[in-house]
Amino acid sequence: MAFFFYIPKLLLAEVFIRTREMHVRPATRPIAVLLVSATTIFVAVGTYYFTAYHWGPMILARIIGRSI
Image (cartoon, rainbow, N blue to C red; front, side, top):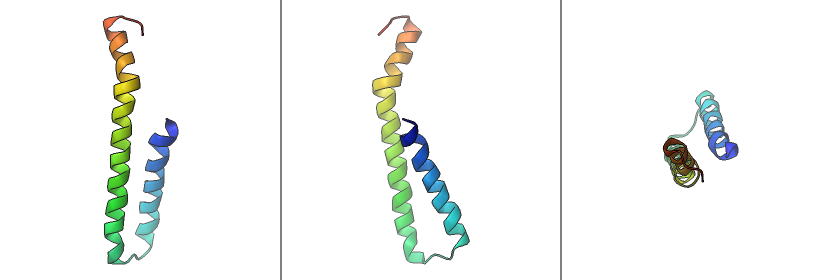
């Protein structure tokens, strides 16, 4: 779980930090937008599924006092 939530964000931050220092062509901007969008969607879908199938039921079970 840690890999899928932290590593993509760290890699993306590293790319942005490195590209700031370099002069990139304007044609690479759409590729960067697609990469950021794909990463955002991946993290959002992963968060939804972990919440719906792992964290959510356990949290609700604790709140209402039942064990799973």
